[in-house]
Amino acid sequence: MTPALVLAAHGTRSSAGEETLSALAETVRRARPGQRVELSYLEISSPLLSDVLPAVPGPVVVVPLLLAGGYHVHIDLPEVIAEHRPDAVVAGWLGPHRLLTSVLARKLARAGLRATDAVVLGAAGSSDPAALADVRAAAHQLAVRLARPVTAAFASAGSPSLEEAMERLGSTPAARVAIASYVLAPGFFHDRLAAAGAGLVSEPLGADPDVAALIWHRYDEALRGRRTVPQTARASS
Image (cartoon, rainbow, N blue to C red; front, side):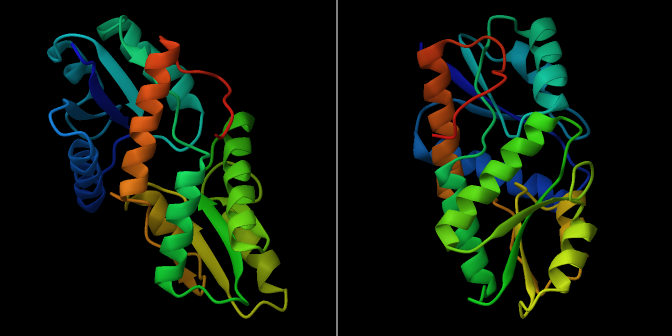
């Protein structure tokens, strides 16, 4: 039996965020017709991962819909899986990856990025240094793609904060600051990015086909390695 794919998102109080994640799950399904794909959440939204896992028959691969490592990857997710589906194979989190870089670059171009803009990669943030390092690596990949510096900044925990980055870049000769939204869906963190006072803020990564392709890549990668716990480090290939 081909293992079912269970997507594990964080959860959001934003109805637009839930709609975007549902659309992403549908994009994932369309990429491999006939393969079972279930969307679940660690908290807040429903259905919860703890309810979905026992209800899915046969083998299961869980792909975290998280862009970096951190508490949810290393604590929340393993606890839920250990209690409700210890036989599940667990994939790595999504970023950094060149497919995400492509989505970020397209979203910025669509929002009207100019050659003179200073660019910030705006992320949620984390108290986990390794998670912050993941975001900084994503910023470096975007800088290479855009051929200009990109500053990683964080809306919650992490340095520099979004406010610090905006203040620093606001004192440079750049015509304006553009924020590349390193979030999957609308919600609290994207609202923080939108309120930062940048000249433009790109849309969340959303239900882009490249995000769906990356999810299947993580699924395949996990099956090849037969991982049963989230990995603590991974190359960005």
